[in-house]
Structure formats: structure tokens, C-alpha cells
Image (tube, rainbow, N blue to C red; front, side, top):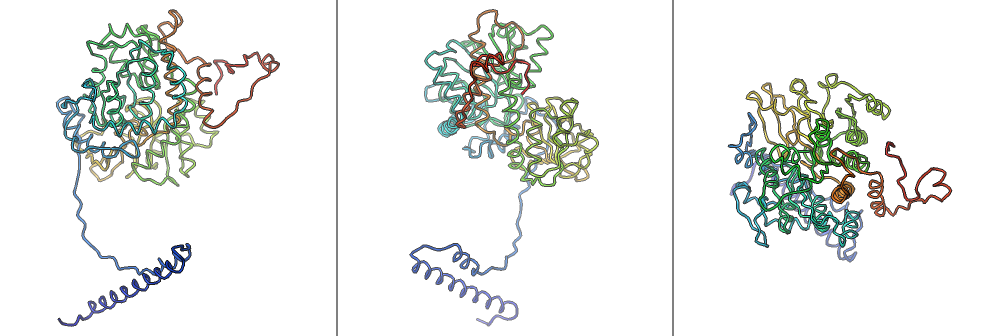
Amino acid sequence: MSEPVGEAKLEVKQASKEVKESENVAEKYSAMTVSKNSEITMGELSTVFSAVPTHKPVKKQIQFVEDKQEFSRFPTKAGRRSLSRSISQSSTDSYSSAASYTDSSDDETSPRDKTQVNSKGSSDFCVKNIKQAEFGRREIEIAEQDMSALISLRKRAQSEKPLAGAKIVGCTHITAQTAVLIETLVALGAQCRWTACNIYSTQNEVAAALSETGVAVFAWKGESEDDFWWCIDRCINTETWQPNMILDDGGDLTHWMYKKYPNVFKKIRGIVEESVTGVHRLYQLSKAGKLCVPAMNVNDSVTKQKFDNLYCCRESILDGLKRTTDVMFGGKQVVVCGYGEVGKGCCAALKALGAIVYVTEIDPICALQACMDGFRVVKLNEVIRQVDVIITCTGNKNVVTRDQLDRMKNGSIVCNMGHSNTEIDVASLRTPELTWERVRSQVDHVIWPDGKRIILLAEGRLLNLSCSTVPTFVLSITATTQALALIELYNAPEGRYKQDVYLLPKKMDEYVASLHLATFDAHLTELSDEQAKYLGLNKNGPFKPNYYRY
């Protein structure tokens, strides 16, 4: 063999030197281990690792597989299977829980095309894969640990069965936390059929776990629009089971039953609604004189609005954005559309991380609050060309229009923290001149002809439950409120509630809060008889009048 020459000779010498250095390091480490009886200080470890030689990186050509998805229009019923394959497959790869089981072998088949049977022999459900039930059960057990108040309510009322005879049809996010609520309702005597209020927020394994226990669940992550309404219809339209209570989140199930099954709707004893969108729909029905059943507005209860809307969004907005985009917020310019409780939570979180936050508002009171909290209130058009992130949380429609999206700078992030997908005009982006490129689960690049691209999250749907998760403890507060509202409406004597929309009684709000104080080992001060008389209060509450704003 001929002797290496030039650069090759130098590389051989360098390699020989590095081998000797590595051997010296190994000998040094071995001697330290023996002499110290395997107890090595951080300083000694630092000495060892600093002696490890660095190698000149070898440049290799990496080839990437191009994976683009283009959407020119919203899918029709005929195209639901292709949509389920294109969106649902990537959606289940990264799930709204930090750790999630996914059986990719079933991704190509729509759940509507599969016949599945649980261990009890029942097929009255439609989920992604019933075999995921065991993993889903573990998720539910984890959630139960931080929902002690709801579990406490379950144990207290289980013997009385206050929901015996109740047939509850529900349309909410199907997560481990919601599963704890559903199983609480069942423990209190109710029969339940359930579907999802969002096509991206369902935890497939949790849906399977509920189906395994006998709850008729019709939902999976990545449904098409047609699948969504089909699932709602399957919950309502059954020959052997007729609902008498509704638990809704967004009003879609209520709307579907009102339009498609008016005779079933008239026999409902009560509706519990937890979102601003659904409550708005109920008030519209009531104003038009078409609401023929009493309804409970949980969204505007103190325990929902001040805790779920504010504290939950304060934490989950960052979780959703970080998981999907890996963005650093320090110095970023962010505009939050709406300064209600959700907007307040989002702004507080972003400000704490060093973002420059603008607020848009229509309400002068909320706008003044934003100003006093240190945010600049602007019109969206004033900052549209300079902002890095837009977050909508108004409950309205067309808050961000196509014209404004056209003027955003390259690389901007657009997302929604409101319940409905109407706030961002996503439909206007499904045109031939724009290219949609799926980057990762729930993350799309929308590319303009000049190469500009914006990052659209969850196709304009609810960010936190579509792309990440939400704090379990806060959901315990909301779920307990929902359970009590259902118990109240179902057991209320005839005539207490008319065909209208009601707020949760103040005493019930206080009871929900008191159940959760034990988690913090909090001790309430008790009024003396003299103090209670002075304030004109009952010593056991309620402690605030209905008009009090917390």
C-alpha cells in the first residue's frame, strides 16, 4: 500500500492523535472510578468531558421528501374519506395529549367504514380504534388525580342517584377530563350518548375507553365536516333511546336537534351550554320565542368565566403556540383580538414572556381595562403589516379577513382561541392561487404566489384543545359546574324554570369554588353572627348579590 500524501496524510495523523487522546481519557476516567469508588464530582466530570476531542463534521447531502397538501376548496360529502386520510392521519400522529397512543395501521380506514365491538358485545359507538381503550383508561385515571372536587361530588351524590332516569346527549371536547365528567354523570344515574364539538380535539384513546364502558361515543380526531354532523345525528337519531337533557359546547347539537328533530327537542327538560357561541345561539332562540325548553348559561357563571376562560387560557395559549411553532415570544409583536376573559388570559401570558402585545376591542369598557393593564388598543389595520402573531378570541365572525391576511408579513402566525372557526376567514384562503402545505399536525403554510407564507394553526379552529392540552384542575371547576347545572335542571320542580336562558344560582357557584379550595389547603374565615347581621348576609352564603362582578 502506498503512503498517503498531502491532506490525506494530515488526516491520518490527526485521526491517530484523536484515538490516543480518547484512550487517555478512558484511562483517566477508569482511574477516577477505581480510586473514588465510583463517586465522581461535577468538577472531575467537567475535566473528563473537556478532554474529549472534537471531530471535524463530515458534510453529507441530505435529501428531503417533499410532502405537500394543496386545498383548493372545502371538501364535499363525497370527499370525506380522502379528507380523513389527509388530515386525520397527520392529526393522530401528534395528539392533544403530551403522550398518546396511535395505531397507524388503521389510519387509512374511516371509522364509519369499520365494524367494531367492545368487550360487552355492543357496537353502538364509532371511534378510531376500540383497541386503544386500555391506554385511554390510564389517561382518565391521570386526569382523576387532579379533579378531586368532581370525584368528591361523585362520591357524595352517588348513593342518591340524582340523575336517575336522565338521558343526556352531549357534544363537547372528548378528552380525559371530559371523560371524568361523563363517568360522573353515569355514576349519578344518567345514561349518556356523546359526540365531539371540535373535529380536532378528540383523544382517540379516551373515546375508545368510554365506548368500552358502554357510553355510546361517536367521535374521532380529524373528522371531516360531513363526519362531524353524521356523529351528532347518530347521537340523537336512535329508535331505542330518546334524550331528555342536553349538555352542549358551541350549540351545534342543540341547533341540529332543533332543526332536524323538533319533536325530540320539545321533550327536552333542560339544556346546559358552556360556550359564548352556544349561549349566543340560545339567546337568539329565546328572543325569537322559539326556545321551548329551559337552558342554563354556564359560560357566564363565575366559576366558568373567571377560571376556565381566564386562567386556563393564560396557560394553554403558550402551550399551543410552543408545541406547534416553537416560537420564541421575547420581542415578538402580537395582536390579541378581544379583551374578554380569554383575551385577558392570553395577553397576560404573552406579556410575561416579553412580547409586545396590542389589543383590538369594540367595547369601551374592555378597551379601558386593556389600557389600564398596559396594552395599546389599536385597530387591526393599523398594525397588520408589522405584527408577528394574530390571536382571535372574540366569538365573532370575519375578525381577520382575506384582505388583512394578504397584507401580513412573511412568516406570520395566525390562530384562534375562540370556540368557533368563524373568526378567521379561512374559507377565503382555499383558492387556486394559494398553496396549502402541511408542515406538521395542525400546522399549515398558506403560500402566496410571490412566495410569502403565513402559518395557520388548526385551520382556524380552537388552538389549545386542537393543538395541545389544557390544565386538568381548571377543567375540574368547569365540569363540576356543568354536573351541578344538569342536576339542578333535571330535578327542578315544574315552574321553577320557564322557557328561557338562566344563569347558574350564586350559591351553586360558591359551592363549586368551595369544593376546590381543599386542593390548596385553604381555610375560609367564618362570619360572626354580628358581622353577618351587619352585612345582611346568611353566614353560609351566598356572599355576593347576583349583580356583583368579580
